[in-house]
Image 1: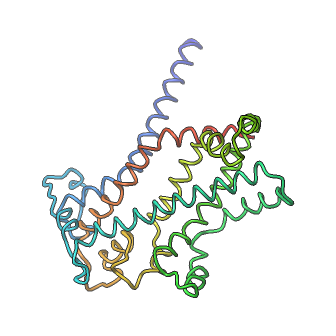
Image 2: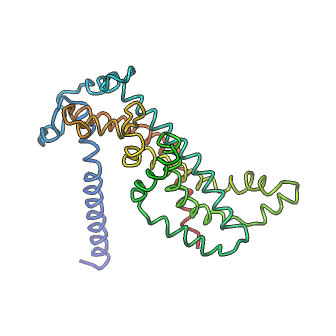
Image 3: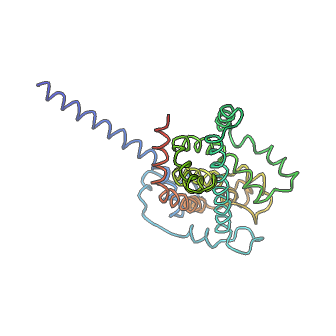
Length: 296
């Protein structure tokens, strides 16, 4: 065999092995999601009632979705419970995203553009704080907000925001550092104030980081359980979707444990807003990661 033929054979072997590894990794990643979706369209009442032959469904039913969307699991709530919980989650997540964007961009602009004492130390401290787990602050936040009588939605938004805003402020600083200050100076020469230049120049050029901040803030608040349980766990009328699913799984009250197909349907329905948000912001996410990757 010639050296050229040997090189082609090795290249084909590498491609084959690479594709096999990628297929196995993709199947390993997709299988849990497929399993949950499959359970949600079935009458399975236990998670381990499936066998390998059940991976190809023979009967599809929407009973779980119908019961979840129309069911009233808590008699104290007169409307269908789960849609109300999802709406609460979306409202809290949206408010957290907006507040996170404001705080992150203002803090990032200050760290990047303004001359202040110990600015590098403050930036490093901001970076170090991002390594602290958010759940570690749940108890201190609960004690603080209980004294302030803010164990409600307002308190939840204020508790969610720092976890996203601190990390996003560091990213905003890096993004603003890459924007030449000459753009703002030219705009201010033309009559804009510093705030006007920030809104019309810096904010627009840093839009990928703004979108990334919005996505991170939304995900953190939408998927949170620990802080929401500490703040509003005793009031079912204020529950979020995560608290509602926890209840439906029978962990909050074992006597009310439902079929797991209902729990799976709830997980699928909760994933729809996240999937829509990801699809809308996918291009911005790509720009954000590529712009931050190019910053030295």
